[in-house]
Length: 344
Image (cartoon, rainbow, N blue to C red):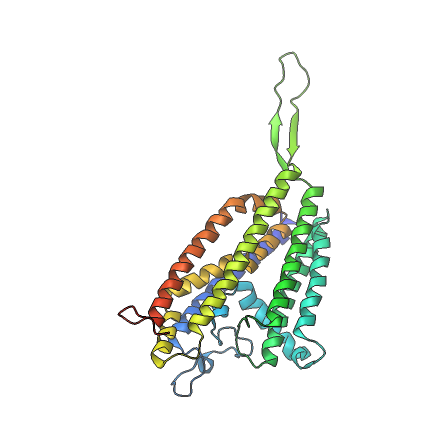
């Protein structure tokens, strides 16, 4: 049961289904936007996306198409990013000079620790509060990047790889996720799940009823499950950030010839690239964390960790292999002539 009553459970399940439909609907609109409109406003173009959309581009995530945007998970891109913009418009956070992106990053570490404390609780209500707090931490993670981009006049989602803010944000995210994993381990250690039931046989003469014994999962198995998922988070985060860097270098470089720039746009519009980007939307570190938090909220944490223990590695390996194939094809298409000699 998701909530304190069956009615609340049905309501939350309905909201979850509607949210999934919303994400798929937005994905379809993103694909059509990429296919039919220039990525940036162009005075020479007859129709720009901002001229046809009924949602203001200040909060419409589809207006600015970037590599990181199409690889970003659904929750951050379609929900948290517009909410960050709305709150910034109301509170003028970007104009408040004493609030820096790094200070926001340091603050969401504190929120992560508070969330982990709640998640380690024996009370389901407290664990659900912890889930909400960690999602708030994720929203703050979006906020620090938004403030940094606004102050540098950068449009759209982009990773400024190599800057101090990039590394500080990454370290703060790692600390927050580590706190979450520790909170989960403490909860499972204090509340070991049941492994199964064994019914003992009885003799014919015995008047005693059959006795059912249940066995608790050992701490060793808890450690194994938690470590397996933690390693998946590390692999997903490392690969996802690597491919953002690679695709940004391939598809967003401005020091290319006109012909190569046209090829960049052609790659962006291919269905294969969109498929690769969509796969990373589903399996990147943020999406895996959202699934983990959902399992905690629904009190299905142990079942989630069991099911993803080995399956997660297979999915990640498949997506990485598909992405490597696409990266090789993109490099060859953009930067190589027909005779195979490099143009760079």
